[in-house]
Image (cartoon, rainbow, N blue to C red):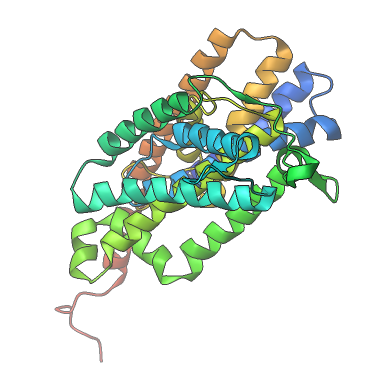
Length: 355
């Protein structure tokens, strides 16, 4: 086989890592403090936000779907956490229950899962296109977040010692072994998703559905359950992000997560996941998240205008899609070349054998 095509294939498969390397080299030259340990830890903490959303988004896109609601879900989950920490849960008899921080985290995580469950149910049971369903959920979640406190924020989420709900800031700003908690959360969700997609039947179902849903249905793949799971998992990731952001800011704002879904989709596409589904890796999406965040943070450190940042980020995402399409065409060409070589290597059945 032509070695040139093989070299192109290897370079295209490693394109996300190459892009990250180029970004790091460029900003390390342009920004003196870019590669300091403290700055890298802070930027990686920012990566955790996009990375967590990208993990859930990757599973959804692998099935051929999309989830535009993750940013708004993060926003409303942050507001739920703020309401529980500030006002507690009023009961019908006039009493109020206050939860400690682990209980608040669990409640909000379940709330995010339920929103994702609704998305998956509407997509599978009612046949609504994922784009339309999650777009509608985005508006519902954002509007509900604004209605929660009449458009106002829940500030000073420090809790009260008497109520036993202090320590919320640890989730977003605490550290373990010198590494921020959000980074550990991203690593944990990454390992979980890698195990799901590579070591379990569910992972094979996800890829099969995205590759050819009709064939997967004929093969007995539980399509409905698998799709509901990936949307619920995406909702869980969005809920954790809402908690982390509220914890970092010590404030729950109804507009938290605005445009987060675009960064998550961009990271997923940069990581090599095909928007049509059936092809991609969660690990690639995490590298894509590093590219998106390092690029954004580097431009901020250089003093680049917010308007130019949006333009550059958009161009990077479009370029990634173009390169992905080129890779797919080249891969198909390589497959045809291999089949041709194998066919030529096998002697014809009609050719007489020599005695």
